[in-house]
Image (cartoon, rainbow, N blue to C red; front, side, top):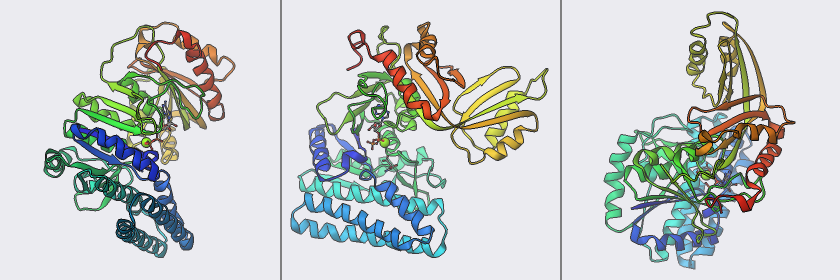
Length: 460
Ligand code: ADP
Ligand code: ASP
Ligand code: MG
């Protein structure tokens, strides 16, 4: 079997859903499990309606719910004959009524918990999958709709719940596998999940990629296809750099680094389950299905001429500089510093150290005041926000002298706050002021990719 995941833009309207159906039809011999996202923009609107309700703006929240209902009904109208549409409208209205009830509840309480946010957010995927499943059936595909909450069992960390792999595997084998074996196209939702007790959770924004990878890995898929709105993983974010090239093949490690450093095209966690089982991941364009996309595998053939593969960036970063106040014999300093971050469950992105000083970057500043207070017991601490990390990625960086010099040379007039090269040696990352990030990425892209005649074959 294979897993085919369609992101928000791939299911954004009737035309997109028709495209998806044609793409899925071609893969029937490979027994696809289809994982869908909410229609583009709907998750944001659902969360916004929840926020409005909690702020006492109940009418605005209800208006938003009505517009979400309207958008889905329009899709139904454009996809189905009148009788089927009538039947489906009833269900869409039912979803909208449930959402309105949630709006009422939250506005009475005046409080919005992560658990309620997940309840709101789940409707996006539930509505899109409902429509897509029925369209598949109308197009004579043997679709079987499985509610992901029946198998994607997580803990109760609402809004970023952790899947419990052993249980998910058992449930997938019980619920999904027999349908696949029976030649059904299983249609299900990404992103949404459930606790043991049946309370709806979600696994983090952009999490449908992760859902797809989990399903693929646990059911030993031959291939995991991530269908999106660009031709594959590109040499830079196309919204920042013009003329970004497609990367034909890349390693799991490279893709993971890019994802962690902000390339939205893949959710950071996506890669892990696939890596463990050595399952290839294809990133493909649903608006251009003829393109071969990007293939991600554990060990692609190394092309010695290809040094830098892609440039990613992440905004909203805070830089923390920590200098030990005990100047000599500072053993235990690093341990003490990281203990504090561990205590507050705050992920550190990049680190640069000397014996008595350490610079780290974080994007989660929820506990920053507590962290700084505790660090100040044994160090001088300064923080600066509105920073961005820029990250140059390539498996071959480790064998290529002079890349860091080339990088710094291209931006020699820009103040770089911190530089770090990870132990994996496949990325060089550095911190700059957030307002300079577009220009830095554009200049680096020009440096490494503008000479198209000299570009290795791996780029297209
Ligand atoms: P989906 O809704 O299909 O999950 P996303 O919006 O999450 O799609 O991811 C696709 C988007 O990621 C692209 O439209 C593109 O703007 C952005 N992106 C950022 N960096 C890259 C990159 N290096 N390669 C390709 N796309 C990128
Ligand atoms: N719909 C969810 C989101 O917008 C999940 C996804 O699209 O991957 O975050
Ligand atoms: Mg995405």
